[in-house]
Length: 272
Image (cartoon, rainbow, N blue to C red; front, side, top):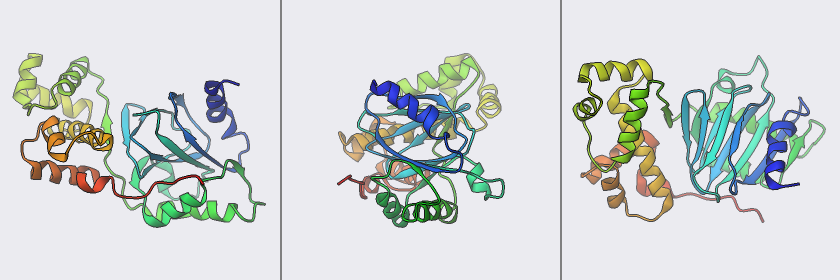
């Protein structure tokens, strides 16, 4: 069986084959992406080695190393890694109607030490875990319960995708000029619109302001640069349009929860 065929079989057939089981799978992405699909189970996805882009509806979620995303049951999503070396660690859980609201809402959260050690414990697991499995099932069940208890609020690592062609054009322009400090006035002039009309368009289409959208775009690109480990923090600040390093670092902290210099600190899970 070709690798692509095996990948497709796993995501589209194996996870939901047995309704009551918890399913576990750790995988190196390789050259592949996971096309749009959904599961009857809720998905915990953790990443190492880069950023994974997860698209749901009209949103693109940025899942960085040492964070996880919870994807509720029946939510269609496609997965794209920033590099073939990205490792994804997945646990799929049945979700009951009586479960907390957390399990019915998609979100990205940092992984704390407790959750990390439990995830490390699962590193060699693969396939279905049943209630009769006295060693693995209690650990997996505790893992699911802990998610709602320790994940107090999702990080805003999501960029809405615009529907209006004018905003799609704006997004391309911003991405091509991230090293410049672009104003709303400049964008409006580029599109042949008034600032007021453009401000209203952003609010109605992507539900956030131009400034917020632009800041998210810059910080997510900065995160990619940080994880590449090819540039200094000062160089990265300039590459995304910040002449002040303290301002860049403070903005990065506000959006991503850690300063750039702190972001790569932490442990990876190595399979023995």
